Every structure is written in C-alpha cells, then in structure tokens.
Length: 221
Image (cartoon, rainbow, N blue to C red; front, side, top):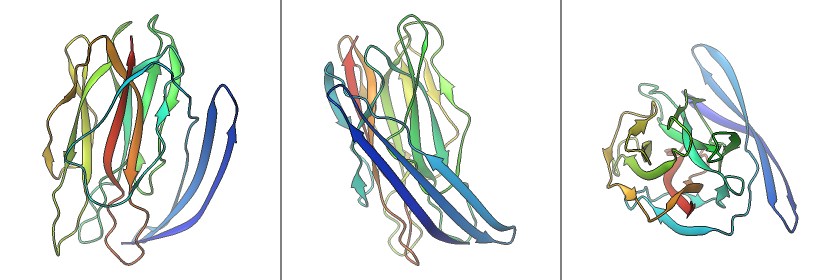
C-alpha cells in the first residue's frame, strides 16, 4: 500500500502567558479499498514553570527530529493517554505507533484537556486508557521499540505503557513489534505533565517509521 502526503498547514501564536500551535494534516492511502483521507489537528501547547525532570526512553529509534514539548495546563497532570497506531498492512510499509496524546486532569478530578506534540501521519486513534480516581496520575513510562531491521521494514516505536501513582500499570492498544525498554520515572512528589515526540517525516518511496522516541516531562505535585 502506497502512502502519499497531501498537505500540511500550521498556525502559531505566542503570548507572555502561553503558546499555542495547531497543525492540520491530510493523509491519503491508496489501496484495494480505494482512497482514505485522514485529518488530524494537533492541540495547544502550554508553558509550565514547575518542571522537575525531562527524560527520554533510552531505546528510541534513530530517525526523525524532536518536536517542541507540550504541557498539561498549569496545575494539572497527565492521568491517561491515547495512541495513534497504523495497523499491520501486510507486505506494505508499516509504521505502527505514529502519535500520542495525554489526557490531563486536575487533582480534584476535573478534566483539563488533551495535549499532543505531533499529530502523526498514518493510522487511527485508539481507545484511551486512564488512571482511575482523583489525584491519580502517570508517574512512570516504558516504550516498546523495534530494533533496526537492516534490509527489512522498520517501524521504530510501537507502543508505550505507564504506571499510575496508585500502583497500576496501564497500556493502550499499540503495535505488535519490538521489545520493552526500562521503566523511567518515580521522581519525588512529581507526575508526568508534558511530552515531546521524535518523528520521522514521510519518506516517499523509502521506508517510513513515523514516531521513533518520546520524551516526558515531570512537574511538582
């Protein structure tokens, strides 16, 4: 199955309090089922002054460049997430994990919105998973990455899992290739509040990998 990038548009604005960026992408897939158009809009970015750590997976793929980090609104933290994943397309060019979005929540349980560092290129957004209860946030993460396949089809990052502050592991429906890296996190009185993504742009007739690595930010609770 051949993938073609159609158009991309971005609008950015800055202020002293926050910065926001939006990106609309349209992807075309040509295959046996005809033409599919998928549009995705990235969400706003916020500035945080209570950051304590920024950590990558340590096993991410080699391709692509880093996005700017995006943060949950001040006073809120990541309590769940969803992934954009391209399912296996058989003998075509697989990319697996394309994007991630964090669900933000205030300590009183009120929903604070969704933040995503990059909209991804292919696939669909899967059902989200969250930590249950007030004050229960993401504190650790673990990335699943397929190693370099040499002459084979590379997919790089396939899935990501988290631990909640109350001790439960959560994992969405990601890609099926690769191995899990080590857990990162567990920092004193901190929870995940932001994320950046390392993403390879479409390679035309070359081998696409899409999302290669993730970097999470922790903020003071």
